[in-house]
Image (cartoon, protein in one colour):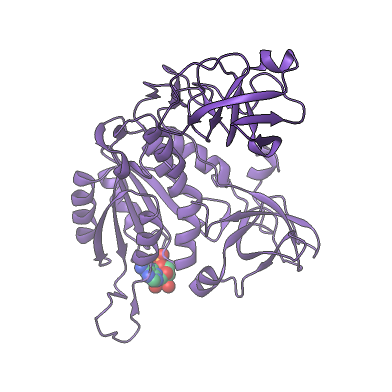
Length: 422
Ligand code: AMP
Ligand code: MG
C-alpha cells in the first residue's frame, strides 16, 4: 500500500491526485456518517429470515431438554459393567417421546432408541451392534465401554438462561431452527432500511417505450433493484428523472421525506447536464466526490436532512461496482450496526492482466474450481465500464489494489465473489 503522503503526490502517470480517497478510506468515511437503525418490531419467526435481531435471544429452556440417548441400543448402569456382569435382563423399551418409567435394577438393562430419555438407574448406552440378544430377554454385551458414552446431556447444546443469538445478528436458516428449538415463535427485529432509488438522464427510456435517436433503455434501475432486493430492504423505485435541476430537486425532496437512503445513478460527472452534485450541495451536504478506483471514480456521498445519499456513476458496470463496494456495506451497517467488509479470497489468476498503479481496479472475473478443487480466476470478457454483459458473465471481482501493477499469469490475486455471497 502506498503511504498517505505518497498517494497524495499528484502525477499524470496515474490517477493519484490530492483530495482523492482510497476505496478503504471511502468505506470507513461512509461508515462514520451512519447511525444504525434502532427502531424495532415484533414479527413471526418465519418472517424474520434475513432480518436483524434487535435484542439477544435468551433461551427459556435447556436444549436438549432432557438427557437422552444418541444411539439405538441398550441403557445400562456402568457400575454393573465394572463389577464384570456380562449378561443382563432386558426389562423394557424406551422410545423418543415415550420414556421407560420403571427404574432399572442391578443386572438389568433397557432397550433404548435415539432421542429417548435415559431411564432411571442407567447412565450409559451401548450401541445395538455391540449387543447379542439371547433367549429369555437376556442381552450379552461385547467390547469396552465407559461411563456416560452415547449420552446427550440436558443443556449440552444450549443451557437455560444463556444468550443464544446476539442483537445485531442477521437471521439465517440455521437461526430459524435454533429459535424454534427453544419454542420461541416471535422475534424482535430492527426496522428494515427504506431505500429510494432513481435514474437520471434525458437519454433514458423505460421498458415499453420506443427509443428515439440517441436514447437508451434504463438498465441501472434494474440492476439496483436486483442488488437491493437481495439485501431485504424496503424499496421505493422513483423511476427516471430528467436532467433538469428542478426535477432533480423535487425527486430529492420527495425521496428524503420517505427514505433512510437515496441512491441515484448518472449525472455525477462534471458534464453540463450533471445536476446531482449542485442540487445536493444546495439542499443537503456533500461529503466527497472522487475515489481512486476504476470503474466508479465519480461517486457522490452526502446527506439530505437525515437521509444518506449515494450518487452512483451512470455507467452500468460502475453502478454495480460502487454498489457492492460502498452501498452494500453501508446498508448492512445501517441495518445492524455491524461493519461489513466484502469477503476476499486469494486465488491464482490464469492469465496476464494489465493494471495501472495508483488506483484500485475492479475487474469482472470468473472464479472456477478445477478437478483437484483448486480455485482459479480469469477476467470475464471486455472490461469497459459500460460493458454490462461482462458483469452478467462474471461471478466475482478481481480486486487489484492501488499499489498493484501488471499481473503475471500464475500469481495470486484478491477476489470478491458476488454471486452466492451477499
Ligand atoms: P452520466 O454519469 O450521466 O454522464 O452517464 C454516463 C454513461 O452512463 C452515459 O453513457 C449514460 O448514457 C449511461 N447511463 C446513465 N444512466 C444510465 C442508466 N440508468 N441505464 C443505462 N445507462 C445509463
Ligand atoms: Mg447523464
